[in-house]
Image (cartoon, rainbow, N blue to C red):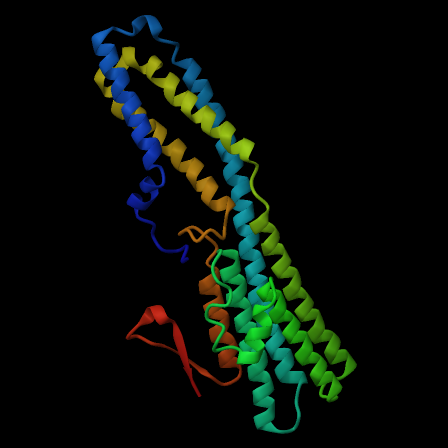
Length: 303
C-alpha cells in the first residue's frame, strides 16, 4: 500500500461504523429516556468521565507509540531487504565472471530473477497470499517445482541462491574472500526474513485490547450522565463527536500493530518489491517500462 496517499475520511469512519452505530443508538436512547423520565437523579459529576477520558488518552497514546514501533521496525527491515538485494546483485556482477559475456549475463540474470522472486514471495507470505503467485517468470519449471515443495517458499529461494553460489565455487569462478562476501549478504537476507516473520507471528496482547475497549465503552456510558443536565438534546451529537476520536485512535493503533494485514496503512511490501524488481533489472541492463494500457499488471522489461 502507498502510505503517502490521502486516506478518505469515509474509509476511516468505516473502520468504526459498528462503534458509531452503538454510540448513536445509546446517545439517542438516553435523550429519549431523559425526555420521558428526567434522569437528573442519575446524573454524575462531569469530573468522573473527564478523569476516565484522560486515563484512556494516556493508554491510547502509549498503545499507538508501541504499535508505531512495530510498523516502523517492519519498514526498516524491508529497507534492509532493498539494500541487501542491490548489494547481492552488485557482488554477483563484480565477483562472478567466466570471461564469456553471454554466460556472465545468464548467471547474473538468474540471481536477479531469484532475488526478485524472493522479495515477492516474502511479501505475499506476510500478507497471507499465495507466495508462488507471480514466480513463474522468475524460475524454470523444475526450480519452481522444487521451491513449491518447501513450506517456506522465501527460504527455499535463498537456498537456491546458496546452491548457485556453490556451483560458482566448484567452477572456481569466485575466490574464498568473494564467497564470504556473497554468503554474508545472503545471511543478512535470512536475518531480515526472520525479523519480519517474528513481527507477523507475534500478536499484540489480546487482554490489552479488551481493557482499552472496556474503558472506552465505560467512558461512553458515563459521559451522557454528566452532560444531560448541561446540553439536553445536544448531548447526543456531542457524545458522538467526543467518542469518534477515541475510537479512531484505537483502530489506528490496531492497524499499525499489524503492518502486514493488507490495509491502507500497512508497510507497502508489494510496492517495495516492485522497486527492487526495477532496480535489479536495470543493474543487469534491462530498461524498466510500465504498461500504461494496464497499469495494474505492473512493469515489463525490454533489452
